[in-house]
Image 1: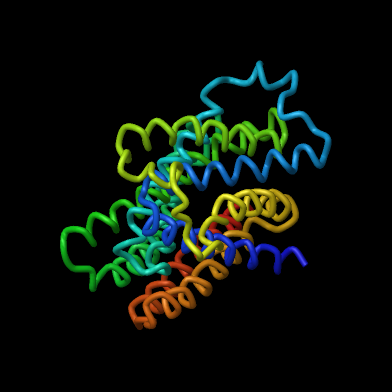
Image 2: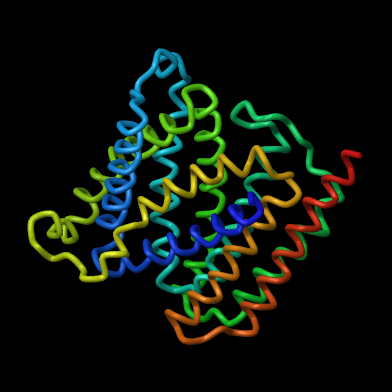
Amino acid sequence: MYYLIALFTGVLITVMVAFNGTLTGTHGLYAATVIIHSVGLIVITALLVFKRESPFSRESGTVPLHLYLGGAVGVISVLLTNFAFASLSVSALLAMGLFGQTLSGIVIDNYGLFGMAKHPFGRHKWAGLTLMLLGVGIMAADLTGRAAVVAAVLAVSSGASISLGRVFNARLAENIGTRRGIFFNYVIGLVVSIPLLILLGRQEAGIYFSNVVSPQFYIYLGGFIGVCVILLDNKTAVRLPAFYLPLLLFIGQVSAGLVADWVIEQAITPQNILGGVLVALGLGLNVWLERYKKR
């Protein structure tokens, strides 16, 4: 059951990326970021009310302030991903993002940053990392033009920021609970994204003062899906072996990403298929070697 949930979570991540990217194309980068965090905040607030749970607790005031930065980092992730979406296929965007998550995860683990357990980088990880880099390289081989190259760099950077935000959010959830952690994540994200809209996206702000709403209502569901992804992640993370969870999530993401490429661009390139397979093999090799080393 939980294996299917993990696969479904990976599919949801792809759907969320596609919806958020389309939302950006409709309303602009900064307005889309505000909408995403507004919807997410409404959803998690409704869930807290349904559970009769206050978002504030005694622990909230004693948590180190830097752990609340996950929401701010989340804004950066959304901005980078949505910007890159315009120039990359969905599957390439997801693969490059995963590579960025892997690189930043290695750095955080190697040095034990932000209070995380220290796991030195071993030589056994080079093989998997090389396969992942090769897969990303194949996916990026046909990218031409400065905009596409910049988008690829931003996709990798987005993955790195996701990894950092995940650390902050996980530690915050440990202190105040998952639902409260999600609530503050979206509150901080909204607090950060609104000034960005005012300062950098004034021309986009018209959506809030007019009736210009896309008839494609589903594109506004990215924030809702984001809350669902976090809740499902927390369910599977404690019930599935670490060996399977990243693979299942990525398989779900890439499979749905290839479908999204077909729906959005009416094309699935051999490079994206081969690149996705190599990234998955590299990820699988890394987690398998890590598991084997612990025996």
